[in-house]
Length: 430
Image (tube, rainbow, N blue to C red; front, side, top):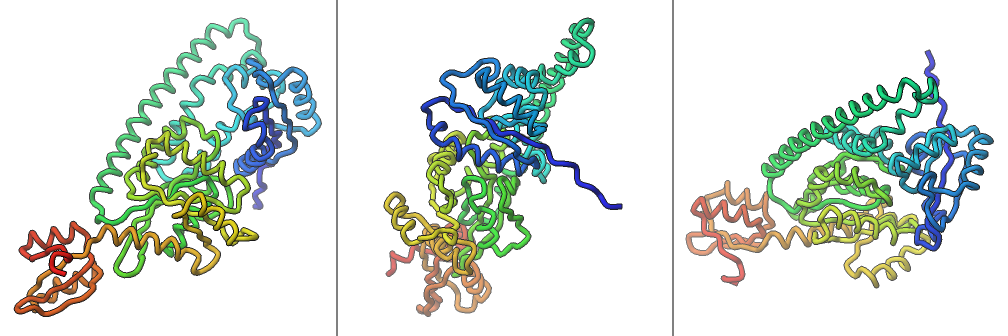
């Protein structure tokens, strides 16, 4: 039997920024991004409507004239959904639905819907459900409007209010339960982190669709990592160890992408997942250099990192997708004027990630000081381990000892000391 896909929802996009605001100046760019979000959510855009409002209408956000224009557009395009770029209050959402007779959503609700459909791991599903319930709780009244439409309000107002309070209580209980489950997940994450072999750790952060997953796949060679040219292609935190050469390794974590007007509840819910970034030695801020609004996207990411309490983390700016630029050299020159330490990458060439690998090697070496290890020449086991885990610079026979000068993690050097091996900083004997 051939399965027929259900018809896509027909959506109208609405933007109503404050007159004279920064958002009003970037109205078209914001609507374009909202269109991509709607497409990712599975709907088709059939119309657009904009209005720069001098003052927000408390009931409907937009003015009465624009509301009538929107209702007419819904009828003409046979739209089944209206999506506002601005966050709607519960009252505004309810009033708009009553007037337009179609489902009304805002940007935050669309993002939550995308997260719900793309969450794969148990943890991501818990986080999305928590965010959805927190968003739904103050909007429950809107969900009950169908009662008055179908049977009228007389005789139903009392029971309706009782059921509404019952639903609110159940949602609050579910929110508390989900928070407890997420705390258990976070404790499990901490246990896993404490059991890992110490090494340089880096977390990929950035605007959605900047190419973080592509970079992780390119660095690690793990082709099973999912990559797609869509907003929020991946939600689950993914960690891979990357071989940098010269016996150096780094642990790199891919995190969920950020976006303008990211729902506060969603940021809070994903805090446990993003703790992986908070524990990292280095944040790799990946920027889509080919995007016209890359500077605004960088500012958005910085704001979310600040909200999460990661503003003090060491950050390495990585400008990605250089292959999509008409003048990569010119862009690099302009960007270096603002970020002298910036790195420029592309995943479309085999050597496109070498600058990033070189920078990570430099940081990994800084975490491995040069030490001088004195071994018994017959101790092949420890000598082999130094060659496997360290970067042996030279080795010489000195009397009864084999002196090995090697770059080595402090914890490995301390382990040798506890075993009775003499380990001293190399510069004291150089």
